[in-house]
Picture 1 (spheres, rainbow, N blue to C red):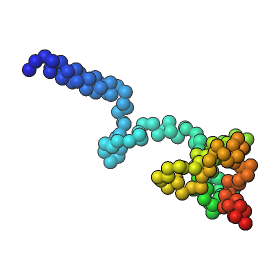
Picture 2 (cartoon, rainbow, N blue to C red):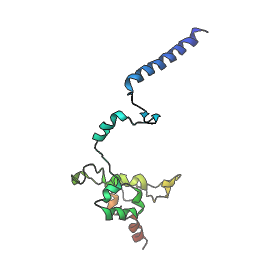
Picture 3 (cartoon, helix red, strand yellow):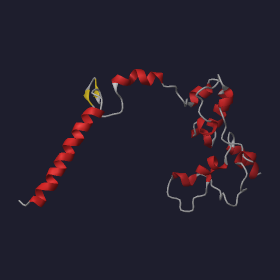
Picture 4 (cartoon, helix red, strand yellow):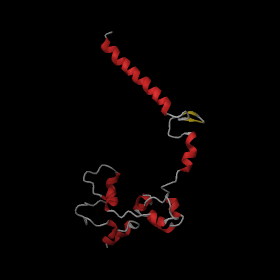
Length: 160
């Protein structure tokens, strides 16, 4: 064979060997090794102690329900019941020890993520009532007119 065929082959083999050598230095020995044998994944037995030191930033709706049961049950009966509390109220990392850290996102952009009208509906997202953000009260926060904890009540009031 001519050298123009061998040179790229040697380069490719060299790159593969370089990757194997670099990987042996960068990837920990216990990566992917579990009780059941070798498995791919992000879990390593060697760093469990590190992960135990990490402070949990987000909690679950069950955590919120411990103190705010009636609010959580109320919103669970609405279309917004599928949305985690922290999507609007921010991470509950230090709540209730430091309540002021729990901020509520009143921004219009938060609501528009789901409630912007889709002009070419192609998914389940198209079943959500949408508005044209350019013409529907531009610049105003949605919560000035709409209660996100009781979105069905707003619809009933408009149709009375």
